[in-house]
Every structure is written in C-alpha cells, then in structure tokens.
Image 1 (cartoon, helix red, strand yellow):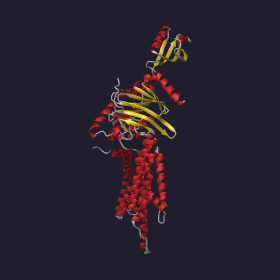
Image 2 (cartoon, one colour; image 1 turned 90 degrees about the vertical axis):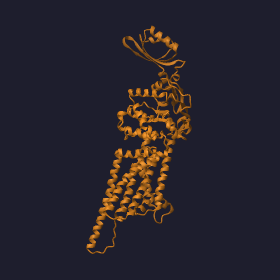
Image 3 (cartoon, chains in turn purple, red; image 1 turned 120 degrees about the vertical axis):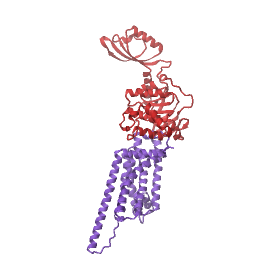
Image 4 (cartoon, chains in turn brown, yellow; image 1 turned 135 degrees about the horizontal axis):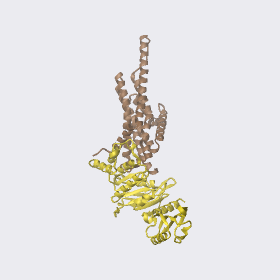
Amino acid sequence: MGVPKTLIIAGREFRGFLRMPLGYVLLAVYALVSGMALVTLLFLFHDQLQRLAQQAMMATPSQAVIDVQLSVLTPYLFNTAALLLFIVPFLTMRAFAEEKRSRSLEVLVSYPLSAWQIVLGKFLGVYAFMLLLLAITAGHLAILAAVSTPEILPVVGGFAGLLLLGAALVAIGLFISSLTVGQVEAAVLTLGLFLVLVMAGEMAGPGATMLQSVMGYVSPLYQYQGFGRGVLAFDAVLSYAAATLLYLALTLRGVDLLKWRG
Amino acid sequence: MIARKDSGAPLLEARDLCKEFGPVRAVQELSFSVRRGEIVGLLGPNGAGKTTAMRMLIGYLVPTRGSVTLASGDIFQEGPRRKRHLGYLPENIPLYNEMTVSEYLEMTADLKGVPRVQRAERIAHVVKMMDLRAMWRRPAGQLSRGYRQRVGLAQALLTDPDLLILDEPATGLDPNQISEFRQHLRDWRSRKAILLSTHILAEALMLCDRVLILSRGRLVAEGTPQTLGGAGEGPVATQITLRGPRAGSIESLPEGWGVAVSEEPGERGTAIWRLEGAIDAGGRRALMQELARGDWDILEWNSGLSALEQVFRRLTLEEGE
C-alpha cells in the first residue's frame, strides 16, 4: 500500500514552495511583518508599564489596568489574522491557474485520479505551507508566554482560530484559482474577495438586521473576534469549517466547470 | 516494421464528438477509432480543433455531444479506472520545473498507481529507453527541449499503456531528435495504439498507418496517406523538377501531362522547369522514356508526399472558404 495519491499531490504542492523564491519571499515577509507587529506591541506595552510605574512613584492614584492579553496578545492575533488576508492569495494563486496555463493540469487529469483527489491534495499542500508560516506565529506566542504570564486559553484559542481562519482562506483562494488562468489575476481577485468579505462583516454587530448579521458570518475577520479575545465560540468554529467545506466543494465545481469551457 | 493491427475492440473510440464554446463550434461530429498496432495521425492546420479533440479524448474537456470510449469504458463515467491504459503528452511538455527528473518520474509512478514493487523497475526501464540517466538529478527547468520531450514521453510510458495520445510531439525538436523520436514510435507501434496530432505532413506520411484530416473542427478525410494522396490505383500527384536542353523545350513533353509551375534559366542555355500533375504507372514509364530520349535531366521527382499535401491543402482551404 503506497502513499495515498492525495498526499502525493499535497507533497508536490508543498515542496513547490520550498523550491521557488516565492515560498521564501512569503516566509520572509510574513516573519518580518508579524515580528514587527509583536515588537511594536511589546514596546507600547513597555511604555504603558513605565507610565504606570511613574504614576505609582508620584503617588498619583490611577484606575488604569493593563494586562498582556489585552495590550499585546489580542492585537497581535488580529494583526496576524489580517496579515493572512494578504499572504494567502499568493499561496493559492498558482494552485490551479498556473497548472492550467502550463497545461500540466491536462497531464494530471490524464492520470487515474479523481477531481476531488486533485482538489484535496492541493488544499493540503498549500495549507501545509501556511502551517509553516503559522509556526513563526507559534514561536512568537511562545516568546510572549516566556516573557510574561498570559492566560493559556486565549493563546491556544487564538492560535486555533488562526488555523481555522487559514483553512477557510486557503479554500477561498483555491476556488478563485480554479476559475482563472493567470496567477496574477487569481491573486488580485482573491485579495479583492477577502477585502469585500471583511467590509461586509463591518455591517454586523449589536443591533444589526438579519442580513447584516449574515454578513458577519461570511466575513473571515468578524468571526475571528471571539478567538482573538480568547472566546472559543462554537458558531465561529462551525462557520470556518462550513466555509472551508463550501469553498472546497466550489473548487471541485470549478474544476468540473473547466471540463465544459476549457 | 510491419504493424500488426489488432482485430479486437478499439482501444480508443470517439463517437460524434462535438464541442461548442458559445457560438464557436470547435469540433463537429468527429468519429473515429484507434486499434492496437496502428499509428493514427490527426492532421489539420493550426486552429482546426486538434487540441480540443485531444482534450476531450483524455477526459479533460467534456464534449457538448458525443462520447469517448477508452479501453471499452466511457472516459467520463469510468475515467480513473480506464486511464490506467492511457499515456498522454501535450504539445508544450508541461513539467514541474522545480522538480528533478527522478522526483518527477517517481511522483508520476505513484499517481499512476504503479505498484510499489514494480516502481523502481518501471522507472529504470523508461529512463533507459529515453536515455535519461545523465539528467536523473537535474531539475526539469534546466532541461533542453529534447530532454523535456524525453521526460514527457517517459511519464506517458511509465505504466506501459496500451494507448498513447501525443499532441504535436515533434514540435521544436532538432532533426536528430525527430529521427530518434520516429524510431521510438516505430518500436512501439506493434504493441500499442498511437494517436498523434501533427501539422507536419512528412511526419504523417512516414509514420502513420492512417490519417484523419481535420478542418474547422470537422473530419474532412480519413484513410492511409497513400490512398488519400491517390497512390492507390489511380494517378499519383507528382512534382518534378527538370533541366531541359533549351528554353521552350517543355513543349516537346508528352501532350497533356503536367502543368508548368515555373521556368528558370539554367546553365549554358538550358532551362529548369518545375511541373505539377497527376500521373499513373503507365504514364510514368512513358514520361521517363521521353525524358531520356530528349536529353532532359531529372533534378527532383516527388510523388506521394506532394499528393497528400495537395489533398490536405485542397480540403483545408476549401473548408476555410
């Protein structure tokens, strides 16, 4: 019994990032931006602590309460979630668009494979590379835990949220890639769709109409708010899982559609 | 090598294939079959629908109407199972440039379902056949066109498929590589069914047992290169280049034969004529005798290929008008 074909496709997709400059550029940009975000937040936190210490020394009564979760962890997780919106389009753009342009998808289709093996394989391969990016975030969280004493649940919950958000974003990106021929078009359209969904989520909130609440469910960042605050909401988990499955099914449909229109 | 055509069921059968992209009819009512032991050439000018037809044959495009049967099963209903019998090579040989030849062939073997115990043996066999040993560790992106084609053929042959579908396989190869490639096809002919698309008529004449001429998506002719070119029992279209003893001497040739296409002055008062016409075996003998008597030099005598070329031009241009 050999390795399942889905995993073989996933392995090729993953290794592709490690063999191309694009993979290293994305890793470097992700590490730099998320690292800068963490350092900036830590500096701001340090400033706040110093101000509080000065106030204490001057015996000025202060009501201010600061803690590392609110001042560093939550904004850092939101920054990371927002950063994924800009990174994922570059991860998924090649998946189908480039294979269609080069005609390598034709070769793949001529093999004894089903469309879902191809779609799932590509999803797992791209997602695996995204996990490599999130490993940097895990490192940052470990540093944060080492230099302060945050509550463990918000850290774990926030990271789990990033894993779920990332899966949904990758599925959306793959769907767009399955509909386009050029990888640049795929990246631009994916980013555009992410931003539209985020803006749609801005409509949701307390006192929102039913339609506005639905917009909240389709927005990737709106759903992340709970995770960022350490709240593991069942509906948010369900929403990401449903979005991932829905867009994977649409990608399958996109590949099928390709069979009709070429 | 004489091809041994299999009398069993065809390995590939297209029935009334049609593909429409909106108002554009890319392929219309295309029906043909390919059996083991024959090389079938799909000929046609650029844009005739060859690639679209091939994409339907491998299951990449769903036909608007019609069906494709591969190894007695419908390619769309039973695709994954039937495709074990298929080896396919598209025109521009898409390889994953970042992968080495070894990685690519190993991945292909796994995706094609070559059993683990046979994998090393099968890969070694195609690597030897395609002479890829020296390129084994080289990334595909660094390979020449010739080697890319060998890797492409190696992936198509990994499962020793019964059916090979090759889209413009000789494009971009140098003369040595083309000759080598033709030899491979001749070697495989007796064991496989081969469908190759080409717009190079010499290729079809040299290799194919049967050709299908496609024009504007329609099958406009089907037959052996010889019968299509009229080399059966009827007259053969012929092109001859002659050096005559003097200008105007063409009038002394047998009456009614050939059309003078051009006349150029030759050395020392001679004239060079290029003629085209249809001639049968008796006429050919008479013409040779006449030329020998009349002090004519035969510089070039070309029949068959030009005949197929004429048929191809006539059919594809007529369709285009």
